[in-house]
Image (cartoon, rainbow, N blue to C red; front, side):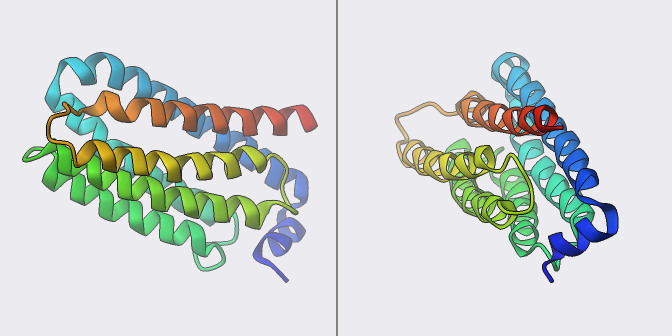
Length: 189
């Protein structure tokens, strides 16, 4: 029996759909606020920009842990467990590198975006049969993996100025995909 099947039997399928709808909406809202902050105060104030760069993977770590806990635990959700671990490591790496070399921090974000995208894709595929609204999550995972490559190109070009605003479009697409998943789940109810 899969962890999601067990969870559905314990909490009922509507409970899972309600959880995912709220979870995706919360992730969309956080990302939208983060994007607004990145394009405004983060761009104008480098210290706040660095704090935003640190906060984004930290939030992803927390969100993956919470969702996994609601979906049978980290052991039953290995892609989310790996995503949480990677996000925690990246949070620390950005905290160490952002103040010294922003290009390295953007490179770290690129590696993380690619890895997190593959892991989000795996989570979406795993949930495909048992939960609705996974196609935006699968698209988001694939787009994240591609965005990671773009960040790496920017990171390796010292002639380019980089900052938190470079990450904002990536986060905006993530917000859009989470909002679509939440809306699809709300519509299907």
